[in-house]
Amino acid sequence: MKGPQLLDRLIPHAIRLADQRIADLVTDPRRLAVSSLRVGPLYANFARQRLDADAVAALLELAQERGVQNAIADLFDGVPVNRSENRPALHTALRGCFSEREGARAAHQLAQATRERMGKLISELAASNVTDIVNVGIGGSDLGPRLALEALRDHDTGRFRIHFLSNADGNAAAYVLRQLDPQRTAAVIVSKSFGTQETALNGRALLQFLGSGERLYAVSAKPELAQQQFGIDPVRVLPMWDWVGGRYSLWSSVGFVIAAAVGMGNFERLLQGAALMDEHVRHAPLRGNLAIRHGLAAVWNRNAFSYDSHAVLAYDDRLARLPAYLQQLMMESLGKSVRQDGTPVEVGTGPVIWGGAGTDVQHSFCQSLHQGTDAVPLDLVGVVRAPNAVSEQRAPLFSNLLAQAEAFANGASNSDPHKVYPGNRPSTLLLLDELTPEAFGALLALYEHSVFVQATIWGINPFDQWGVELGKRIAVSLQPAVEGANPPESVVDPVTRMLLEEIRARS
Figure 1: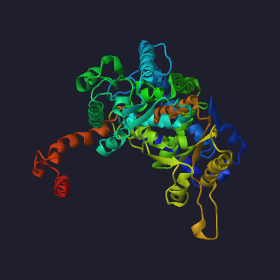
Figure 2: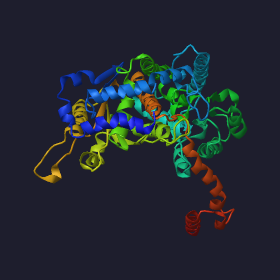
Figure 3: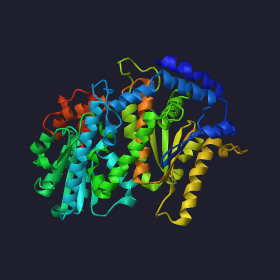
Figure 4: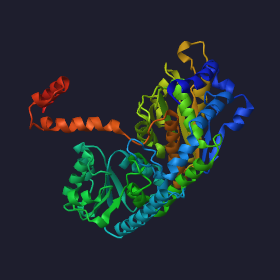
C-alpha cells in the first residue's frame, strides 16, 4: 500500500476525530472494556489514544491488507525479511523454537549450544580471582546489556562488578581503567565485524592494560579476527550471526555480562519472558495481538496526526535507560525513507524517540509536554510491585504515574491563560507486575515486534542500517588530516577544512 492510499484510509478518521477530546472518548464503557490487553506479566492500556472504534477497525483492516500476520510468520520462519542484505532476522530463535522450518530450527540449536558454552566460560570466571568484567562494545553491543543490568539489579549475584566502554572518548577508558586491578580484571570485546573503530580502540586499550589476551573474551561473527587482532584463544570466542542485528542481540552471547551478573538461570528466565511474548505475537489474532495494537497506535499517531516525536517515561528508576535503548531499536529500525523495493516512502516513518525516568522528567521536560505547542504521544511504563521500595515512597511514585497520564489526556482549563493545560496528548500505559527477568524480556520483545509491525505497514526494512555508514566513511578519510599527516588543504569540504584549521590552531 503506497503512502497516498494509506493516508486515504486514515485521514478521514483523523478529520472526524480532530475535535474529539480523549476525555470524552473514554466515557464510553465499551471502550474501556476493549482497550486493555495482558500477556503474562505485562498489561497494556490503550484507552487514552485518540482513536474510536471505527478508527481501530480501519487500522485492523490496514494490518490485514498489508499482510502483517503473514509477515510475522515469515519473520519466525527465517524468510529473508531483511531484503537489502538478503538475510533472515532470527532473533526470535535465540529465545525459542517457534517454527518447523529447517533454518529457524538450526538457528535455535546454534543459540542453545552457544549458551551452553557461555555458561561454562562464566562458571570458569566465577571460579577464578576475577572481580571485574569490562564490556567493550557500542550500539547494540552496549545499550542492551547496560539496560538489562540496571533493570535486573535486584537479581545481581554480586560476584562481579561490570563496567562498560563504548565510545571512542579516551577519557571514558581512562576513568574506567583507573578503578581496576589488571590482575583481577577480564574483558569481553563485543563486535559483530571486529571492524568497529570505537570497539577496536577500546579493545586495544584493554589489551595494553591487561598485558596479554589471557583474560580477554570476544563475541563476534568473525572469530578469526579476535585471535588475529587481540590474541584471544578461540575457546574464549563466542559466535554472533548475520541473522541477528546488533539492536536485537542482547538475547545472544552479546548478553555475556548480563549472564555473568545475574546468573545463567536468570538469563534463561529473561529469554523465557521474551519467548512468551513471541508466542503471543505469533498466534494471537489481530485485535487481541498486543504488538500489533501497539504498532498500529504508533502508525496512527505518526500518519493520521503527523506527530513526529514519541516520548517514553519509565516510572521505575531501574528502567531509566529504556528510552536510550528504544532510541536505537526504533530509530535505527524505522528511520528509513525508501521502501523494501527501493521506491520512496510517501508518508512519515519512525518518529524521534526520547524520554527519561519519572518523576525526574516532571521537573525537566514535562513542562513542554503539557503546555508546549507540539503534542507528543507517550508510552508510560510502570512496575506495580517493587521489592526494595520504601513503603512511603511507593504510593507517591505510582500516583504521579497515574496523574501524569490523566493530565496529559484531560488537561485543565483556567481563567489565567498561563495556567491552561491543553490536554488531548495521547498515551499508552504499560504495567509490569514486577520487574522480573521474565517481565523485562516480555517488555523488550513487545517493542521489537511493534517495530516490525510498523515497518510492515510502511513497507520498509527494519533490519538494515545503511544510514550509519556515511559518517564513518568520512571520518576515516578525515583522520589523516586530523592526526597531522595530511595538510588541511587535502580536505575537500570547505567548512570542514575551516574547522580543521581551527582545531589545529587550538591543539
